[in-house]
Image (cartoon, rainbow, N blue to C red; front, side, top):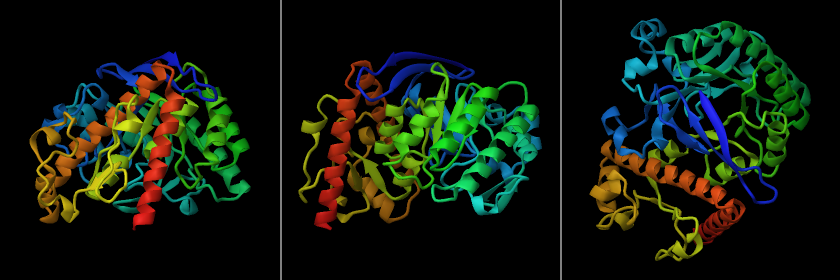
Length: 396
């Protein structure tokens, strides 16, 4: 793994930065960057032959949960094949393994104990021990992996937060002791909404591992998150990459970028696609305010529900200026038809567009940081999204 910081934001009150990140045979990728959510190493609806239709190299980083492989093909078989890259034939892609995926494998803190972490998975509730987890990591051979963590929601007691940190640090030592050759370990940083415990965990992780991963998006409010992020980031090396799990909404991504996060593991695209939604907000950060168009209902659209009957005869693409495969070849009316007859091609086309669009959003963020306009871009984007949601609520 190679990482270097290239640009620091010139805006006051923000530590946003751009950098260059490279994993294995994966081409260099500019950060802040998005890890695409996958199911067993492949995007949820996009098949391997369609991956080249996504923007490269931005789409070359894939998130995978090792817990997905608790069912189906055995880890022993994957290991004998040569790991995830060889099994899937994705030699030029980078895989980041994190136990939690915010879709199917969710931490269940009430059942976690000193032996291992509990997760709700497609196989039911499972207790994952550090040795079991590292066995999966050794078989999959990802480019980077996060250590096992005792993640807790924001509302637990101080004592439970302390226990969470103690267990996570203990499991970090066990995971590092069992770590295979190759692959980069990210130490998990937990502590719920307790700033002191977050800071203590970050300091303990840095002693053992100079790379930090912060587990967020687990019940903390957007108002309390900046202080938690600041406490963690302040304890991490300035020149190391930072990956965060659980922040997926555009506003949450901007909040993370402002704190200095480089990599985002997000299930936002999946949830949009499965709901029949398509992203439509303008991407060019210089004309964001003027480029938004009002709909017939009088509200600014940042996403549209293509299941709605209003699109039944709409012969225009999702976004006129979009160059993704979906917008270049299909109309809203066609996707509306596919959704209403429950044809799986609808999700394929929507995931292609939403992935393309969201990667473009990250590209706009990087441009704003380089040009010293990130805080302005963030304020404009957040204000428009807030106004949009307020108008939707009034018109409902």
